[in-house]
Image (cartoon, rainbow, N blue to C red; front, side, top):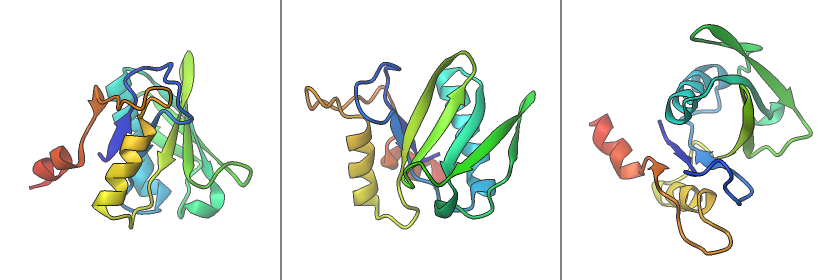
Length: 138
């Protein structure tokens, strides 16, 4: 899963992390994102919001253990963001890195998404690096 999350839920940045899907097929990509966020943050995602024009094959619901996650599509939200509503907790906003991005530009986007805007430090406690991803794939 090409996902980077800020280690603190009260992260001061405009997004809580970044996600680099392999395609714009929401039906194929969202189940993995939901499972990864649920596992990494020990939460239960209840709803996903995304921009309707940025995605193909957008289902109304995504099956998840013990529930069906509702998917809302909007024209009023930023095309480069996905939001996840979490059971009993503050939601998560992720920057979506275009599937055709280069590894270098994706890594820069991951770094920016979890950077502390006040100190410029990069928060990496829950960040899966692209190198780790590549090692798992081989």
